[in-house]
Image (cartoon, rainbow, N blue to C red; front, side, top):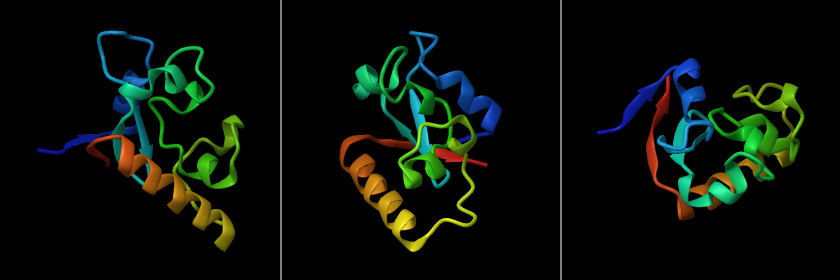
Length: 101
């Protein structure tokens, strides 16, 4: 059974509470990236994406705070392609646990 998360609820899974899994959303689908905690956990190189929908940031290959959001508005075809590649990587490595509503 897939879980549904608000953006606020998703923030609880950002790695700051070690008793909870670490989740990252792409295009509204929530992936459990706990097995990649060295990347997404506190101090990891992608920790800023934990507990967030990182779609725009992944598409733009950006770690800027203003890009860490779900909006795909104004992305180029190339950026959408980059996002789709990320999505495939996540699908191959991490289980989908729900979606952002």
